[in-house]
Length: 176
Length: 190
Image (cartoon, rainbow over all chains, first blue to last red):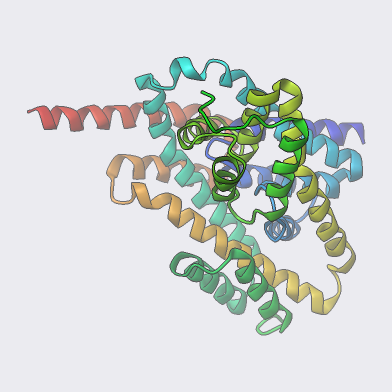
């Protein structure tokens, strides 16, 4: 148990400090650690937890709390949540004090512009890996495609799109 | 930066403000955060909000998470930061645990298994849309697209660990972006 908690703490501390461009960039590494390195759950379960967290309100990294809870109960929940939100918050607090001094420096803008392609590449990787794990037949693929298209071309609330996908899934069409 | 007409929130107002944000924000809490802090509660001016957002986007961590810490710290010190962050994640944590218990209990139920599969497929679709939106500003620009492609290759195809990938590719990306910017400026001057 202690070993598991320590592993959770290490994984999420690292992810916390690497999450440039927000939470969606670290999903692949989270999946790699939780599914492949530690074998705590299947890729399908990981994707299900991610989907559940998307259906809940709040910041989009609540999947961390859920993973910690699934892996090691309440202690796991506390450790994962603290490790994910603590270190990056500490960095924010420390930098806030000196922000006025380097906000307008040219290197700050160069660094920020240079990190934008990284965010794009990592979120694309997240999208592919989560799609791979969740689309297991043509009907689910159609749901994924339709939701992506609707999210890009309409102003429908994401919650409606998730509900639509869940309802379509409930019909069992295409799922053996 | 305390302009006229702005109000300094106390600890309890920080907590309830972010609690409400956590409870009502779906898929992108940021526009709602702006509406609450700038328009409704008048904690920050428009410029003050944009400035803090710049900091939060520059640093690792979710933008809204960083925002709660920065706003809490600015108005009520370390205690304010803790209270704002807790306010933001407390209710969503409880809801997510509720949904997780339902999943743990019913994942093997044949009908509900189909429901969860549909939900996951829809979540994947939302993520694809997010990826497309994020890629739009760099679309068609050679240098950023190559860097983005390298990150994609390393993480999605080769499944390399994130830490070494970032340590190698992020400095490379920053250098290449800087170089491309300078070349463009030189081209304009010539």
